[in-house]
Amino acid sequence: MASIQEAATGERARETTSPAEVYATRRAAFGAQRDAHNRTRYLAANLSVVAFIAIPICLGVAIFGGPGIFYLLAAFSLAGFVAAFGWQARQDARYRRFETLAALNDEGLLRLQRDWKKLPLRQPPDAPADTALADDLDLLGHASLQHLLSYVGTPSGQTMLQGWMLAPAAPETIRPRQEAVAELAPLLDFRDELATGGRHMDMTPAGLRGFVAWAEDEPWLTRRPWLIWLSRLLPLLLVGLLVAQLTGLLHAPWWLLALGANLLLNVVAGKQIEQSLERVSERQGVFRPYAGLFHLVTAQRFQAAELNRVQADLAAGPLSAEREMRRLGVIMNFADLRLSMFFAVLQATTLWTFHTLWLLERWQARAGGSVRRWMDLLSEVDALGALAALSFDQPTWAFPRVVESASEPPSATFVARNLGHPLLPPESCVGNDVSVGPPGRFLLVTGSNMSGKSTLLRAIGMNVVLAQMGGPVCADELTLPPLALLSSIRVRDSLEEGVSYFMAELQRLKQVVTEAETTRADSARTAFFLLDEILHGTNTSERQVAARRIIRHLLSVGATGAVSTHDLTLADAPDLAVSAIQVHFTEAFTRGPDGPTMRFDYTLRPGIATSTNALKLMEIVGLPVDEE
Image (cartoon, rainbow, N blue to C red; front, side, top):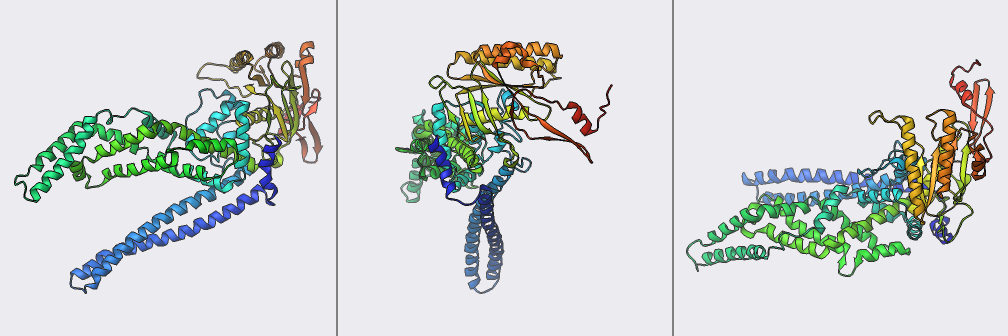
């Protein structure tokens, strides 16, 4: 693990500036270039307007008796208009690029500040089916881990990153990802260009799925070779007959028969041809920008094995991803002629769409089977880039050590030094040393209201998620085996479904118990539960009995984890007292001239909590606390 940590921090060791200073400097530099190109594009736009107006003026002067030089001036005006228009288009593209680059670095500052209101949230539109764990640990949505990783550029990268959050990777996958993240972290220029290209894509995950579906679909025209040959022979016959009449070899307009045959073929097969072309043309916002991104990835020099594997797959033999996407773009330039006002004549005489579809289906047969893999590979680099941005932002965060529990039986399942919550601003995040497990034992967290119990559980859970994604964690050190996270933290009732709060708790706990039992059969992972104030929707005596039974059962099936509670007697039962590792949070209450105040240091201490604060909090907010 030391080599990964050195790779992640070695580049920064040579830098004297903090991530915030780097982002501020880059934002200013890109912003200056954006403003310069903005001024230039307005100049180009004004010149094109002037040139466009000059064309009819010069022609009018020349036509109505002016000197012949005005014809030349009209020609110069036309050339000037074309040149200015092209100049403006180039400046628009450069302006947009530097605008995005400046925004990316501004977002870097917002991430460091955890300014969730101003930081854009980039997330795929497809929500996962089961969001219980994501809700409990703030993995998705506003002010979440997904929000913190919103540097990701492509929509497909967002989808992949979301999948990594919800489906933990195996240790043999995590290690290569860590190496790739560590290498990408200091490569700001590469990562910014990749994110910029992704954000400039005019596509959605649905659009990408549609393009991949077409690429893997069966061809239509290729399975009808007679139609291909007929579409080639009829235009040749038309041209031959027309030339024969023009040269005097034929005196009758026999070419009209060939033209009629073309029109008939259009009636018979033209609609299907057009529909096939539309399946591709409406996805041009997907594949055209990908060619540039494939070039960016394959041209970069990497050392990490995972990144070298991606490069090798994208540039393997004759099926280079970049080259094939550019070829597809050229073919679609032919298809775009359908938008011309003169296309009806072109189609009637040449059967243009038939030849275009033939070229597309040749590309489909050659490269279509590789498209899904290419897109997944690029999405993987994009997702790794988001984790790398997190590593760059937080240079003190560590890459965790994920061990095989079977080969290295730990004294504890989860061991962290200076563990903090990833979503808290670094300047206000309090770290704690945390040890949970091994199976058969659990961490019992007690403390008063607002002292940090739930935050600790979420910090443990979110860092487990980050660790099993292959990213850095908010800790100085972290060691854990492959874990299956199970949680009951943020339970909600449902008026629509007629589910009370207590019933919702029971349903969630049933899910936790079932998954723990299922995980026991899978020796590859350890069930790791996070339970916050379980069953506080019922009376105290029944809650204690039920909670103890649930915890005993989870421990009996080989699970471990953490439980937070206000109930200081929860572990009084002899068997649970032996299994529980008791820790607590506390607070300091003072009275001053401005009234009572309470301060929390969020520092974890051994043992059971020694204080409560419900009545004191009531006093602070101004509620009556008179004794009965």
